[in-house]
Amino acid sequence: MSTCPLGYGDTKAEDQAKVPHDQAESSTKAEPLSGERERSTIPSADGSNFLYPSEKQFYASATAKGHQLNPNDMSMVIAIHNAVNERTWQDILKYEWLHHEDCAEPKLIRFLGRPGELTPKARLGSLFGRTLPFDRHDWHVDRCGKHVRYVVDFYDGQQSATHPVSIHIDARPEVSFDGLKDRLLRWWHG
Image 1 (tube, rainbow, N blue to C red):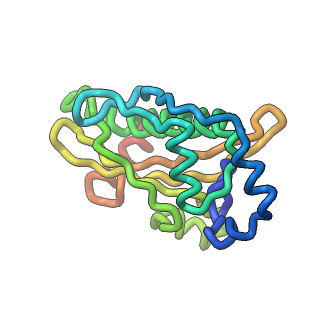
Image 2 (tube, rainbow, N blue to C red):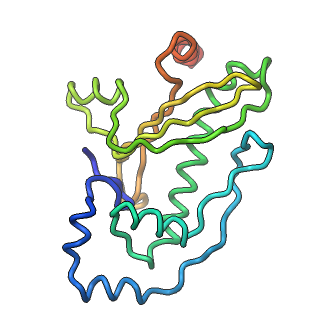
């Protein structure tokens, strides 16, 4: 599996236990993490926009899962996390536009991280030599009363001197009759 450019991926809790004591201590001497949360542009089912996690929340969650993060990098990690989520929502809205006459404002019900679980497309691509995604999410959308699930694979993108972190997002409707129909319509309309 590919490794997330933000430090996620194959790191296991056992690996965290191997961190030298002095390195672990130095990471706790960082500047205090911000508790401030940023409001997204993504509407939720209750009508308000989702709030992104604060630096403090994100760091606590990631380290509890066994990921090793430098607290001093958290402002950049949060900026990248939020930008990736905003871009994912914009990609989902490209499919939702196919239904704009029936539903002008789809809303995100929730999303679920499913790291380590491959989508059928990712599994098939790997058989032909494509790199595996470093993460996968399922985004559940309320299309004015109709529940729609999108699957999202996150891949390492093409890095460059001007873009040291690059993430390719592959967001699409789930494999179902309606989902496949939307994929075909989007492909047809370009």
